[in-house]
Length: 514
Image (cartoon, rainbow, N blue to C red; front, side, top):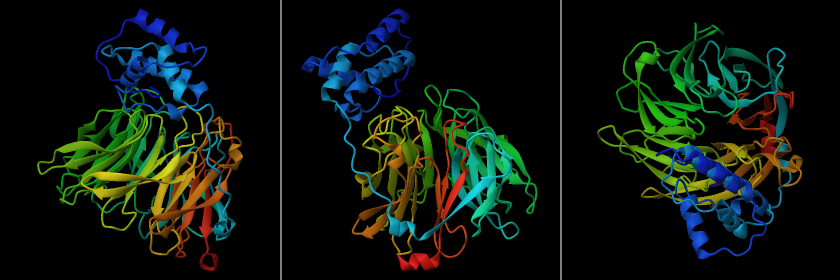
């Protein structure tokens, strides 16, 4: 019951709900012994809407609050079909099995030898921003021969999408390309097939989480090949918090379709795909929507032929109480069927994924991170980077590669040029968090170096600045080596007037000397 997630059937009695909420707020005077009957009723009730939450995922003192939240979610869901145990008994059950305090793994120091290969730099947005940055996504976009490559990033708070030159300069000025509501992730795509690259953008609609219909899918195109001005076309509106968009020819008819991860919040959200049904410049009327999953919490997706049958499938990551990686396979008639290929505890904190062949054996694996701390505002000892190894027959083996509090935005790339696949992650931990002592000592940028034999060595590149919800790895300065761009994201708009992007540029001479 640590997270939201009860479906709706009928509305519960309001008076009963009020009494039960008061009962849920009571913390048992002592833990005491828990009977088998209490254990069974707690497990049945708290595991009815999602995976049963492990007592190990919160400390004893926290469980009274989490149980109260769980009962509140049940009351607000509209369900009344479950046999409801005493909230006091549920709290006692969880506290009886929970740790008194979390035990955190030892912290890794900065790897000085690895860090020595980099030169630091920054990207500052044009104009004087009055708010702290909230960089949600970063990509290198190739606009073609006229404008070349740029480092493009979105600011979730101020609504801007900015671009800076992709070069070897240590300081860049980000130019405003477009202003939306609250843009999140975006994709570079020639959506109309006309040879003009544009940006397909997911727009959350509001900065802070809530249930609303302000989310959108927006298509940005340049007014001309050499123009810095963009036109905006809303392709889908009246959505919840749209967190991600992906493009692919899903139905195999020669044009591009769109997968939309509408995260929503509690009562809103879904995963859907937009079928392109007409040619010409893309508008809302050019698409027909199909719902793949009615659940909230869709964080992001990928489009690929997972099973090798020639038809595109969809992999999606869900957070909220579901905490699952879903695979939607397409059959010969174009219909999708979904199944979970990995599920975690409701308090896991799913924060990102990448689909790749990490071990080079010819099939698709998933790199998964669970570092979201915005639900409980606590640092957890189980935040980690995972490799979900494809074992065939739609089975995956979970390998925990590294404990990294707040881990976000996994980047899977041959970072050091040794012909294997490495992983880089940033850490996003708001300053209001509790636990794990001094957050200034926590790793904020980590390189997991593939050392062969399915082993990864943890190399900490930065500590203390856990503001990196978005990371991008590419050859920004086009010198043949991989560089890192780290976004700055602060919840409190007055918290820090930092550059929206910090860059670590690798120089070939320094890299070869390491």
